[in-house]
Length: 365
Image (cartoon, rainbow, N blue to C red):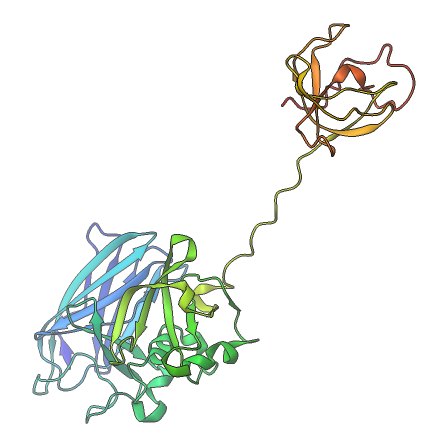
């Protein structure tokens, strides 16, 4: 296999794409905003292959390598990549002229079993059923490509393992066993996050089903899934909306990190201020504007209560117009009392003569 040149393209897009060919195969380098989810599609000789999406790290660089079959077609090979971040999509395209020395009747990606079969080797592929348009998804080194003589290629476990290579050696059984296998080794939880593996432990008669969480909508009640074998056909289905209620748990780690952050702590109780009533009972009312409405329980003399805030209203005999909203039970911020009946200076006994009309530290309502 040889190629006329190394090709690259960026243009005005935020995506840069370059391709290098060697005797071993092709290497595609992608540069895009850090954290982008990039999907590569290759086309040549009326054939196409779509690779599993890769998530770019902090460097914003990603690499996809594969072996080209000796039977692959010669001529122009087109490469297009679509990178999505925060619902913004950038694309990049380029092409090379590739000269192969075989019959040109084979596919674009070597599966590791050129003589037939579904998997094995370092590369395994499954066709894309949805969205329509053909193509295939390929993984390098997917452990499920070697299980059962390659019969797991195209299964949901094969796709999930390909999307999450960090789970290699951890999740090795049926989908229904993945939560148990990951327990204590990888973070798990009940809240869906992008990059997690969603696990249904009861589907398919108890065999289970796993899928890669590509998106979460409707406050977590709806998942956007990339998955395989959805219709028992060993094909790949991308961007499938599914109720989150179908899954019993999620495996985090990898692009999902530690999972969903814990819920925020409850807001602190509102700040109140302690004030002590003077001699004589203090009358309370629901309407501070006219010292009327419904009369509440009186506050006994020299009793400390919690005040929520102050407000101006009806003027009492000495002209004081400040009223307190009483936070303590049984008044519970539904009743008001004239601030004139409190010491307002930290005192808890004695005469009210000469004490402030109101405590300035109490906020306005």
